[in-house]
Amino acid sequence: MSASAAAPAVHPPAVLMELMDRFDPHVIDVPGGSARIRLEISDEEPWDVLLRGAHAWLEPPLEQMEPDALLSADGATWKSVARDLRGGMDAFRRGRLRVRTNLHLGVGLLAATSGITEPGRLRFESIDTNVGRLSTMQAGAGPPVVALHGLGGTKASFLPTVAALADDYRVIAVDLPGFGESDKPIAAAYDAAWFARAVTDLLDALEIDRAHVVGNSMGGRVAIEVGLTAPERAERIVLLSPALAWLKDRRWAPVVKALRPELGLLQLAPRPVVERVVRGLIPGADEGWAAAGVDEFLRAYLTPRGRAAFYAAARNIYLDEPHGDNGFWTRLAELSPNTMFVWGRRDGLVPISFMKHVERALPAARHVELDCGHVPQLERPRETHAAMRDFFAEN
Image (cartoon, rainbow, N blue to C red):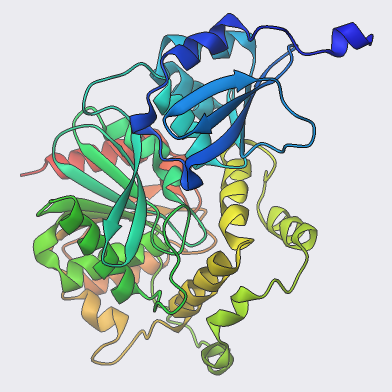
């Protein structure tokens, strides 16, 4: 390839200029106030979006500057994005538009350049609470729905939920403290009770009295705790493959109790080793949602505070006491908000066999079985969100 062929275009493609002309700084939350987001168009040279304060502009990439987020698609998909954010989000869900490294910034840029101005538009906002700043992704208007992600995840795992429900509900997906873009206090408990207080603090800050609460995995355990400790704040609860207290013998409990989560402040293994292990554990880790999810996990885990929060939360999930007066399964019987469990028949983390134990403890709960793994809202979004809508609409 000649030097002239390799040189970047003098002017950005018209489709990217159209996006920049619509940039709205009020719907994107940029950590630190500045970011570099790379936009790639198949068979054309890439361009970087520079975000600083309320301003955004395009410039050719600099070899020595790695982007904070990467968006890539073919020309037709970028035109779809320029025409309609919903078309762009559909392309993202279908894998035609790839967002890597940082979904918060990548999807935030899509929202900020959508041209949508109504109050219910997709927006990213950090909220000050008693536990620190919590990063949220919000869209829609109507009865509020708060969505809580799993261990190592972020609010981005509820992008399909936001898209599916925002026509009729105000959906608020939050990075729980210690994860994503939210604050990560070192000395926090990072147990279900502490996370539940963070959720009610968020509701207070948003001036929301009651909300439907949706939780996946660890977020499901937190949603249960909200229903147990603050039932007046939870309208209905949807539990997507929720983390539940172990019923088998926890042989490593004494060792886990002795370990201090603060060890996470040390990076004991080099980044390439950690990344290789994580990608090896997740099927299809280099494709679609799985790849984006790995990026989200690594982005927090590879920071000292993110590791400490992850270890503390994982430790508390393992040590959740199943029996006794204050045991999980004893308390579960006291859950008063109407509750729906969504189980994945192929879930290797929370097997569907747990359903029979829930039925004994909480006979009034509804159950939905889907042919999926541990993250129903990503793996079977249509069925999951249809079940949510039906459940929320019941008298």
